Length: 373
Image (cartoon, rainbow, N blue to C red; front, side, top):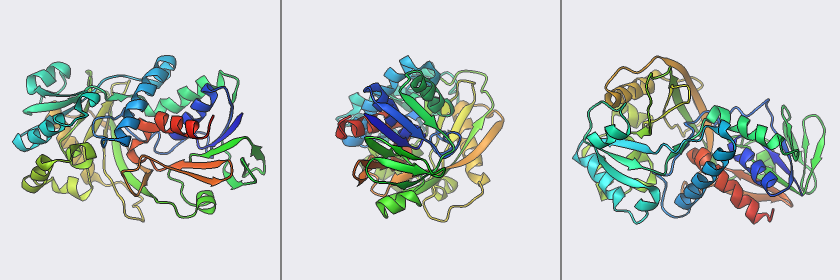
């Protein structure tokens, strides 16, 4: 069987991975020299802790299992089973963490509640003031700027994978075939369009208006911290953002503890992961209304710096990079992904939102299963 995959972000690359794993030949087409979108502009978190119960959590847990297995075979991914800590500062935030522990799926997530001293024993870099921390053992991390490159190297070594960069697919022709902007036609037994946040052009032509929107974010990365940050770190604003934390305790938090005005204006939470070089990836904001701004705003970065420094109990290292990114998200955010047959033998897979890095191995596995690869 020959599979044509369009788009070399993490979702497309994982579709290529599953096809090759099942013994098939893959032609992988990317419009740029390599993926430059949300697959690189993220935290590299395998984020189980905040996922909605049911299909979303099941997908994340399966993906977490797959990431670990792939990471053992492809060390260049930088897979680390580091877990996460969400420090809480007062009784209102603590009550949300305690409500999360009461969920029937808390054990599957690896939830635990740690005292401040216990949290510092797990992550000694957290020297700031907080009362306790929600621990999630199943959270993990990979290196977002390296993952696709490492996976591609492993795929090339199989002899059943061809990578065609700098080619934009312009048309779907017949069954299971696409034509690129060089006029070449690529024919297989199945075509999977993993076009990320590119929702116009070819996608609109073959699929029409789909229930997927684009979301813009801002993030930053620091110079090396100079010590290990042994877990991912979130703040209590993540309780407001992730569906796993919905509870009467969260309602009370929203009613009695106003979110910081900058965080509220930019729909922010703190997420922080240490890179292999020691730097910290920190974010993020969420912008949903089009047209998106073309510049980055400084207030969110200043807010994130204050929050991080309050947890670390020390100044943040120099910020070396700031960037914006755009990802595709299902309008109905309870849906894990938009998967649609757009022509005979041609499927569109997009819209995982901020779950793309976390869930892509399981999303691609489900596509492979449904298409009978």
